[in-house]
Amino acid sequence: MSIIHFHYSSFENSGEIRRIKNINEHLVSQLSDSVIEVAFVSICYWFRKDIRFKLSSKVTRKLVFPVLPFSYSTVLGKHLNSIWTSLIIWCLCLIYKPSVIVGEYSVAGQSLRFVKNSIRCIVDVHGALREEYEYSMGNNADSGMSTCLDYYEKLGMAKASYIVCQSNEMKRYLLDKYTFLKDDNIFVYHCYADSSRFHINKADRLIVRKEINVFGNETVFIYSGGLHRWQKVKESIELFHCYHNKYDTGHMIILTLDVATAQKIVNDDFSDLRDRITIRAVSHDQVPLYLNAADVAFLLRDNVVMNAVASPTKLAEYMSCGLPVITTSVGKCWLTHTGYIFNVDDKNIVDIDHFLKDIDRSNVSEYAHREMSIEVDKEQLHKLIGSVKG
Image 1: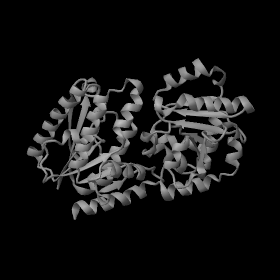
Image 2 (image 1 turned 60 degrees about the vertical axis):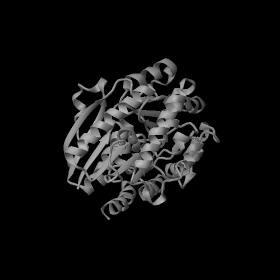
Image 3 (image 1 turned 60 degrees about the horizontal axis):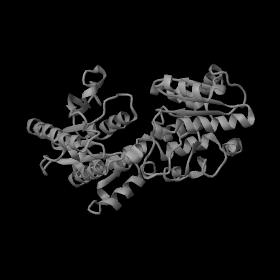
Image 4 (image 1 turned 120 degrees about the vertical axis):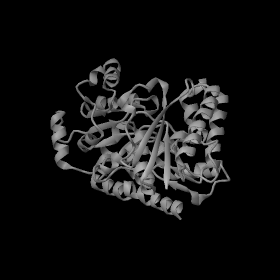
């Protein structure tokens, strides 16, 4: 059985690539030893060497194709790019004769328009794309682009023999939106944390807290991730600022690859916290070290559909290391146990220490390992593998 696995992602260290790599390792590579990886890359990144990485050792060949300019910002560009990428997939089907095509992202259907019905398609949906677009654009959102995104999402859903999505909430969303979908053909793959790497480590906690000059029972807050507007990093720092102003104590760790931007935010808007905030750029392997040094983690999100259907990987990473999470009411959609959430819509951040007194970090970690580990995800994909092979 040969497989084509295509995606539109360029940066190896991004969260979405981690998900695609896991899909490749836990699904695609289990179905075949002959995997053709196809990366559709923005022309802006075409000459970057670091886009040539492979998703897994089972990828026998990686092919990189440019997408047309303006394909992400204009309706005409989106339609032209759909024809372009669909022609590429069609030609590759003639050459490699795959039994299965796996397409990444909600609008993977834009590249499947010429695929024969005899080839089974698996679409990995990880986002409510129209809602994401309208949220990011705000009042500048183009209704034509919204309609276009819906069109290609529906095309992908209709083409899909099987669908993989990132949360139970996303599965309900898809079933409600597309009544032709069948419950049994949708599999939930959260992209949870690897519990062998993300777990409580008391030795690491002491080492890192000493390194950042935190001693005793001082409460340490942490944020790990990018600095996009929707990740609400500045709002997280503002909450920490309120806590510090009340008690004149506390420390915050920010883990991000964009250290310069994070430092500028602190210098421009929170200069009095410069000695209270540690900013680091670390590899993904080092993230657990710093999570263990913390007491609570920030994961703020707006209460909108695109966040309700999400399954943030960092949520599982935080909790696997024993950290309760500071978030909003949307967090209730992510967990079956909401007692580990400090909901800032209902509570004042200055009361966080009272909340933490009632939290046993080992219980948080055990819950995450039981409910939010990569092993849970693998079980879902084993069911999908059985369906495809059957």
